[in-house]
Image 1: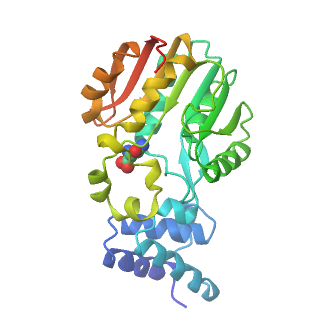
Image 2: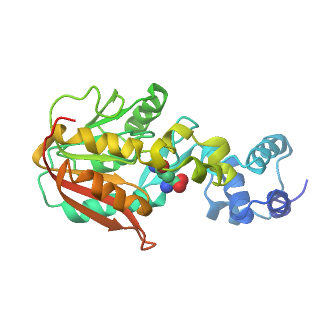
Image 3: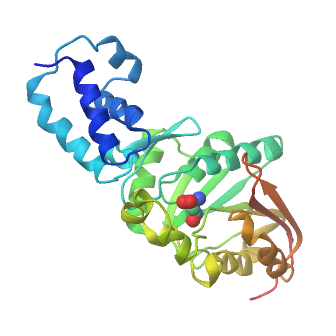
Length: 284
Ligand code: GLN
């Protein structure tokens, strides 16, 4: 049997031949997953011989990745803001920008008494769960139109032992009663064209309904902005992840619904997040 070092090299070469950019890293991660160990332990075992009975499983993992399935779906989980989040094809893989959003929120609101938070379109539950952990006194309601996504989110609450969150099926704010100090969402905001130009990992595997919105990617954002005011407390805030190129249109649309609009940049210095305050409570 070849050594693990040789198997690793062959795996890397295979992924490279399939055009996978981070072929070495992905090969290491797949082998670590196969052996249920971390990358450091894998490196310490590189002189061991490969166990023959594991070869078909490894091949299977490599074929999936070679077919452009995202590594996160293959290994089934991802780290998000220190939480271990299960992901499957019903939910979007949490992005780094969204972790940045959590960072911004904690640095802005960490000292304020936040009693209630509503996470719209929670998917894997990543945003709601990260906020639930960092605002342990707050009650979080996380909703999604997809029951399948909510089943995954629920598993993530249990897996991370987070209890100040509950889940409900709702199409944005449709079935929501009561008011919240913070409403947050990472809604679909890509245009059809952006989706068509996205890498295969996204296009072939992630739920399109979580990524693409009509009206140049703005339909869901506008729907939320138009209806969220009634579900916010007087000093409540609506926070959205968006594309920076949309901020002008969002600011102009939001004027009818909110007194205060603020754009926030991500680490790449691109406008990415929108903070809306002073709801006018207009009935849309
Ligand atoms: N930032 C995500 C992406 O590029 C889009 C997420 C979303 O539409 N909410 O793929």
